[in-house]
Image (cartoon, rainbow, N blue to C red; front, side, top):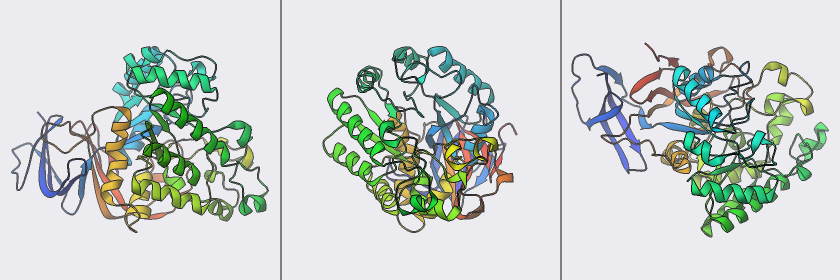
Length: 435
């Protein structure tokens, strides 16, 4: 049985209140021992973790793997290698593929292909409505039984309030969240940029923040009425944060996520970049005030999780007029470093809170067992070097796509090892699965 010994790391698991320097021995797929000065038996692989943080494995709630149907942008093999490089031990695959993941057979397809090709865990998400068309509920129960961990029409908001109400009622029976892309399209009207002086100067069609906020308010009221768990995807505005904070104070079963691009960039950054379509996403980059509200929401727990909304696109989808370009940026390989450099390092977010937002809370949102640093637990582990300096370089990326606004950024702090079910799959930025 394979053995892996992590020597001398700072074991940090906020859920357990664990923060100590110790060795951690993995035997097979589980954590076998934790203690000082553990001696490796013959044949044990030793990973030097002195000066590094050993954390429960990170989970990304919001990933476009593009498989099936758009494999030239990403596939399960390339996407999970990008996830491993980024320190994630598991990813949730959203269902806006071709065909849509809206039935048990498609859920089984993702799980089977992941079994053969993935280097991290892949957790399928099922669509709320058939074909993501917003007309008829998909078979939520059958997808849950097949292994779907959540439901969403991501990319398409569930615009019909009655369908959303029914989805919350049914999903509650199966212990699954309904994760919603909150956008009232009668208000967003195909806008490409946050309204304000920068939008006016660029002459781009505005996307009213009310489009998100009205939809968030509706989902909160429906969750309160049904008792179903609604999860707000990629929160981007200050008022959305306020609404979620208010709802949580009332005991509404609502959770939320924020993306690294929304807590690092603003509409002014887009203006300075000069129509660079790598800055185009949905929802769009918002104001500095909105960014501050998102950071505050992460710090106080109003926003539960950090998720990438990893959305790979071929260059042909981006090298067009800004208003016509595809929405979305890649994020799996930059999210953790952005979190450490832009939030943890300047003291905007504690390291403990960052780990909760990247590991424990995503698992709890999905209703699965959170990764943990405990003897007997499955060994899903992310190792961080808080002083490691990295530059975001396209030639080093494992993803098939390069549509990121962070190319060339110098960041401090990075994942240096990813361990999935006891198997070392990434070390020092290199995929080592199978070696």
